[in-house]
Length: 230
Ligand SMILES: [Zn+2]
Image (tube, protein in one colour):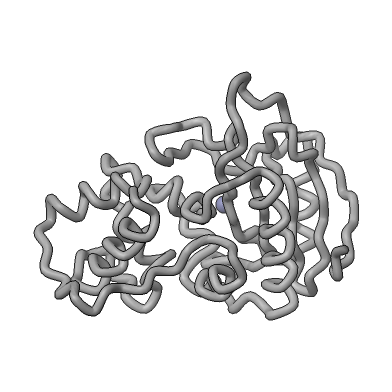
């Protein structure tokens, strides 16, 4: 049973999933608006043409907008493992935070606890692989930065949601640039997009957010590939 308040706040912004697709991705966002009220209003406004399945407020309240069997409109133009209709294949969760535009700040513990509980339930019910729990920036690196470098991915991974890399001591981090692109592509990133490396760092090496390759980034990427067999 959920320990967090759940409120139905239906959005009209959804459609059928493409036939033959199965939900195999979980995409996490931040709302990127000045307040939760602004975000909830926009996600339910037919004129805005955007939505998500859920929004998690800073106090841990979970708003349900779109039934999970419907295609919510959260990812936009995206790509993961070569597939472009991310909305048809995913559940989308908006997490209230003003974002880089309106005063990016840490996600409070109550909010992260609710996110963890909601995500754990979703990945279990749909059989979503840990490596396919992603940020919006992972699937749209040219356009998006959310949920951003302050998001507690390692904390979620410790609770069984997503992955966090533990690099091998034996890996000296030596690399060449062509290899990095190949490895990013093997993991799922769009290698046609140069900002994929930055997106990888934002998710998996937030203290090394440079957009340029370095030994620690490569060690973490290799660790994830070993862990997942990709
Ligand atoms: Zn987003």
